[in-house]
Amino acid sequence: MEQRISREEILAKARELATSIASSEEAEFFRKAEEKIEKSEHVQQLIKAIKKKQKEIVGFEALGNGSMAKRIEQEIAVLQEELDNIPLVREYQQMQVDMNELLQSTIGAVKDTVSARIELERDK
Image (spheres, rainbow, N blue to C red):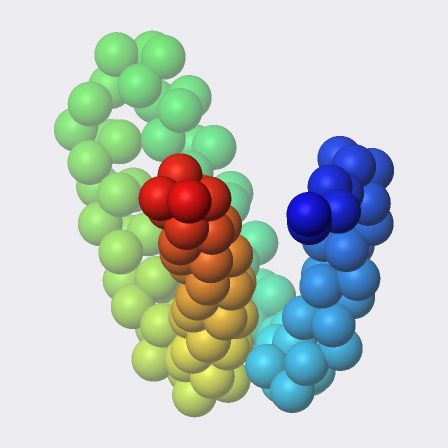
């Protein structure tokens, strides 16, 4: 007969798995890309400008000035395009995609394994 495992033991193993993921090559690449983004004065200036303009939109919308809000939305689009075209930002975005894929594939592997085990147990 198979030994049952407690919820606490499962969570402990999940934390071990999380530590392994955080120590992965993908996580290291992501951290390095994030550091570069944080140290880039140009990138940080663009992010601040976008955030400032987003606040301006909220203010103009609250005042009922939709035309000014639309104009600022266009300015944000220009800033966002400039930000998205910076190689450093594209690298960071790719690292986010890679980390997300690793997490999603890990979740999928756990789900599939659990489902298969439940099927096996049910068929006994």
